[in-house]
Amino acid sequence: MIKKEMIAMLLAGGQGSRLGVLTRKVAKPAVSFGGKYRIIDFPLSNCIDSGVDTVGVLTQYQPLRLNTHIGIGIPWDLDRNVGGVTILSPYEQMANTDWYTGTANAIYQNLDYMESFNPEYVLILSGDHIYKMDYEVMLDFHKANGAEATIAVMPVPMEEAKRFGIVITDDNRKIVDFEEKPANPRSNLASMGIYIFNWKTLKEALLAKKDQPNLDFGKHVIPYIHEKQAPIYAYEFNGYWKDVGTLHSYWEANMELIDIVPEFNLYEEYWKIYTKSDALPPQYISSGSDVERSLISEGAQIYGKVYNSIIGCNVEIGPDTVVRDSIIMNETVIGGGCEINKTIIAENTVLGDNVKTGVGEEVDNETDPHIYNHGLVCIGENTTVPSGVTIGKNAVIYGTTTAADYPDANLASGKSLIKEVEKA
Image 1: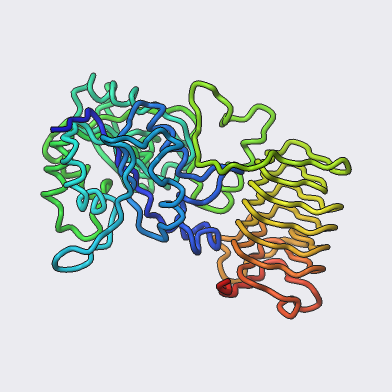
Image 2: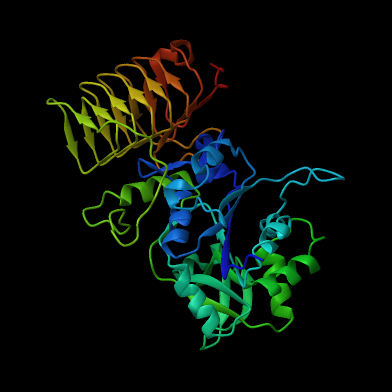
């Protein structure tokens, strides 16, 4: 029988609704990040860099692009005869179709997959955070303390602690209590949603709680283990970790990659970030162009000026166009004479000539001010923007738009222009 010391279960089914139109047709872990990467590349790379060679990826919402990206795991050296990477989608069972209803329910529905490796330990990960972490060091901590469950935590400012699940520990980092988004936190150690369980302990807890609606680790599984007086420890992580769950945090995390000394370094030889790379020509930067403090991915053609921006693969930026503080994703074409300011443009989008974005006063977005804010402009994938239009701050555009959609060739700050994308 196969026996693996530790296998990983990577939760990648998230819709990521706070990313607005970026996740309208794609799961959050499959969203582009840092030009050539996707968000899921980071936890997958952490696995192989940590020596974890068996990963189950649990998908649900819009899984196609994620499945295509991961394939059989070749870029991460996860194409193995035993173990490797396996996509675990919800499937139809005898009685009914069971969608994953909570983080722990998704794991429960894949008990057979985990059982087939007879692991000693199971590592639970989320597919939508940007960080580098050696899970082997966390496992050593788990073993050294004789823990049955270990939760990765990170210190957060006390005033922010009420936004997180907080753990309270004794002097030896043994967890004595939990608080979910407490009004008056007693600790600043926030759960990162990364867990190591002894397999027997996890299996027992999942079976005991399987009938709970929306079965969740923080609400059901961990408290169950805690009630049984089983030792649970907090593993403190002090490296870079970013939840890119909102458009602003997503934009910020991308912009941090181009700091003079980036806090999150993509260039470390000993801790590589792997991704699926197509065979693309090198980037081309024309003689009349200007590029400063930017990441330019393979296949990009720059005929204009790019400042403080992240440019994806096969992007074309026309002559006399100026792009500032923006994220332009793969396969996007921007015409000539444009001014692009603090804008996120998703994949396969076409902007005509003389388009201006991020212009004027900042006004709250009319439909989703909690999503489109901080002065960002967001343009969804497969969108067409006609020539000669001006787009204000906190505006969002999605779909095939024409000149008739822009009164006086203008989309004012805070406006939402959402049209269904026409099928090719």
